[in-house]
Length: 549
Ligand code: F6P
View 1 (cartoon, rainbow, N blue to C red):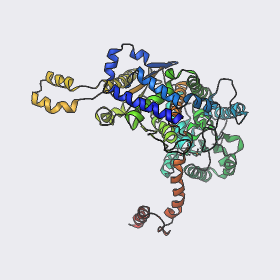
View 2 (cartoon, helix red, strand yellow; view 1 turned 135 degrees about the vertical axis):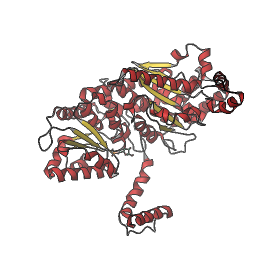
View 3 (tube, rainbow, N blue to C red; view 1 turned 30 degrees about the vertical axis):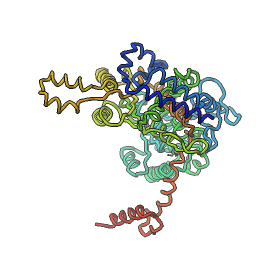
């Protein structure tokens, strides 16, 4: 029934798009001086401007109808009440409990999990304070100067992104590093510049079985044992995991092990003990602010009416473009160098969550799901891929992220940064018509023949959509808000598409095949005849390369 209603709502949106035809956003602004006020929302000092999108009141009404047809409100209720929304793994997805400051209980299988969360957070904060204060020291008695987080995916991207974003809030003299890739260069390039006697390693892995993380962890352990002695290992390692038995086997002391729970998905785990490296860097008070920012968004997501709900609109506008206009990618461009890893973080959040082809009950989806998420900070992107955003054949909706004021950076630079960001979103929307180009060229004194030759290259179609998030400063609370907004946007889309945003079976096959190939790759004499022709050929060619010279 719900599916039928969703298809009906999508069909109505399709008809509405045809009706809208080639209506231009600049004309919508001209006809409605209050458009910016009406089509922007606030959450504290954060302003979400969605006025530059190809939409009007009717579009929004259709999108809200779609959300209701998909049961978004009921699904949100199920998410927050701890229902097993991750049906293929039979688990709730309750990362919001980790940032719950409401004072209310959060039940998992009839048990309030808040006391466990508070206890774990206290342990984590105690450890972070001791490292920061130099009370907790390495085996030679020196305080730690460097913290290396070893993890991958959700056990890396979140803390790595946030540590960079919040670097002005980090303790001086204590540097955080992130090693994720099984490529040995990642670990060795990181360790090359470090003094192991003042280095603390945090092994972050929900499952404590991930090949890349365990390989890096074993190599780091071997290095510490070789340089400082086997007895030093206990002083230089801590771990974050849900698999406490496996951590114990690795040899990490219980007081340095920080657990979390299987109802926290990897890509939603930055709020949990996985944030340990971040908490050490910025300190418990700032980490708490980060959590509070996330909680504010939960509150907003649960209580604001759908048409005034920022993550709901983010999700629905994304669906408008993905499913009705057929746009296949979505760019996130922070005008903030310290948010350089935010697009990569969002790639896992969005594409691992919603990159699915079947619905909750295993039926093939009838429409496109997750778009490609990508991006780089402005202004650098302007000198790389913005050409395509402005004049390419694909329309790519953009999210711009911008702070009104910098944190620990030059104000004059920041004015230029702001001007660049606003100019790009303006240029995308307004474009430059053939008529405008021709009159500009005429003013420059070009001949009619020259104008005819040059003009087509200088035309900007415009009407290219973007959202802009404008906030006071990028501080821990704001980062918490931004992350939670995107988390709920992803959930909104999964609700409309009826897909499970909390599993990730698509990463399994590659892992399995790698385990099968690893011994064949490592042994030059191993038989490749059971492999497909291409894989066998590539392995043979590598063997030939290695045995040449
Ligand atoms: O990429 C697959 C994945 O399972 C992610 O979902 C997860 O964030 C990552 O691997 C790391 O997993 P773990 O924390 O268990 O090492």
